[in-house]
Image (cartoon, rainbow over all chains, first blue to last red; front, side, top):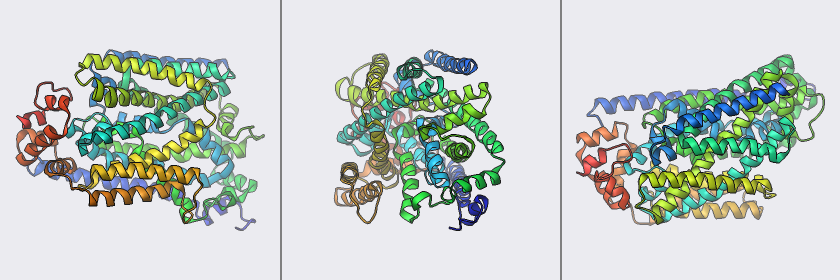
Length: 50
Length: 536
């Protein structure tokens, strides 16, 4: 690792920022599951209440 | 310091008031043990997060990032997906299953799902042993935290913190536990943000903070961390998997699934949990790294880094509230353990095997007595805690994640899972985990937890496949639990008569005598009369 880099440069160049992206992805995945389950519930309720 | 004391005492009084308020609303045994299964998604979500975030949140976690900087976030990364998906992926099905089988505890669910009293005994024992250790550890942590924050003796600190938990749990049972959790997590979330953003501002902002941290050591910035501790794929993956699996197995997490008002609330709870954990877990971890930059002197114990930070940068009122939030993190976990121990001992052992004909009020009385007895026992042990108490607790987290997490997931997602498969999975994974930890095995460089996880998955699959497949009724219950519709209404309305009929048959055959009486409509105690109707 380049010791002459500043901490903030190192934060971006070493991929540490990917931790934050990972959390954003968690929100996206959870939202997708939320919408999927809501649709399945709607279908189940609309199609013979099962 | 006087202001800090006043704020803290006011906070404790609020908790006691909540306990008092819910004492009048606890009318049945089921109210006391599981809140009458009427907890909404918001309260369930906050309660799950609060009970999941223990004393670790403001001591060990900041201590880790004080030492290791950003690489600590490998541990924080699993918090949000674990907590949130536990609702959406496991909780929704588990809640439907629990309603179908009329189970109000995890061991009871496992017994009825697989028609195996042995599973109830084994899972109950695992919960009793691990949760008892956890409870003692929380009392110890309360004593340590209060004594450091308010400069009292360890015993005084423990008496103050533990007594309040015991009293409000005794009064309001699970309802008090949940709604104090809501207050406790709200306090934790708000105050942790106040501390984090204040500290970041004092560090000169995000860029200046990174520069300052980098000047101490560039290893505090990089994901691999000091000594390249997380430099391999496996080393980085292990904490994430461990934390996620913990959310699927920890009994104080799964009880939040069982107590949901409606299975459909699970997805709402999932979304709420994701939002609040994503905006919380990185922040509480990074308090330690901020302390490393801001504190002029290193604390004697790095686990005090967070505490030193808020006392040095926040005004007294906010420092008092922050201290209350820190104690809240422990109390909210301790109360869950207390009610869970009571539930396991009373519901899964006493009521099931020794007093199956006890009335609801007798069970309620026994439940309250057990809370008092277990709390006093844990308190006495915590006065002189075993030397290895925290090591055992860290180990217990992995044990529950393996033995219960894998079993829970397979039980709701794989129809072919059998009692023999789950029993083997629990026993083998625990044995391998214990032996690999104690014997310091090095199998392909795998962490003992990962080794145990592989054994758990392989054993449940192989043994289930070679043992007799579940008969027709459990399969019907499985399908009903996996569905998305309004289960009780569909069964009651006869929209799917086969399912309704088979569910009732399964219940008649699988459930013990007390549950059969309920199914047959003699003592409808668990809120849903659908199966009773179907059975008729």
